Length: 160
Length: 114
Image 1 (tube, each protein chain N blue to C red):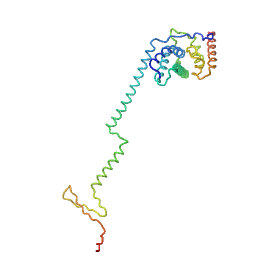
Image 2: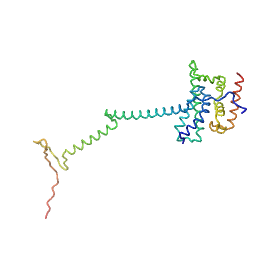
Image 3: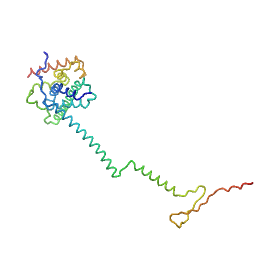
Image 4: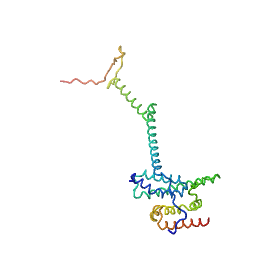
């Protein structure tokens, strides 16, 4: 069971990591924070069932799922707009303090499978085995996907 | 790490996140309470309205059956039942009294011979 002090401590410890993952999907501070908060609200509503030792992994998994859902929704609307021939709904512009369209385009160009691995390895202190467990892939695949993602990002940056 | 992803630097989340989260949880709880309260109030109101309109679709057949049974019992209590004979109601001079002519068809038993 997750107590309130544990929950608040968990928030302090995980907020930045989760926010940085969510930001690379939402590309907007407010929306990224909303995704992180939604994950914490879900953890709090299931506090009787959540094991405090595994709460961090639970939160990461929830944020990953929410980001995936957001990406799917955006792509769906994009297709609808393209079909109708009107200006598609694009992810909001990056905040003024993080105006790096290059980076955004490069990250957006990655397939979701590579993107998840890249963001989890970059912004969490989880080991490859834990990430593999979370994404349902072997640790070796985590390493190879990470290498592929980094290589593609570098190639993209060198192109530009 | 040599194989580091380019330009994926850390960003600080907006300040006051914990307070905003607490507010969100409280708002959500309040909304949930309101929703449950509205549902209960709607149920009570529905029951009261049904009661005041006397709409008892389910209990109506039972009411009828019970009423009919009670009427039958009253009738059977007031009627004269003659077993093994017949009765004829005669005109009565008084409204609260009934006069019957009753005949029975009992077999005559032979007198015991001593």
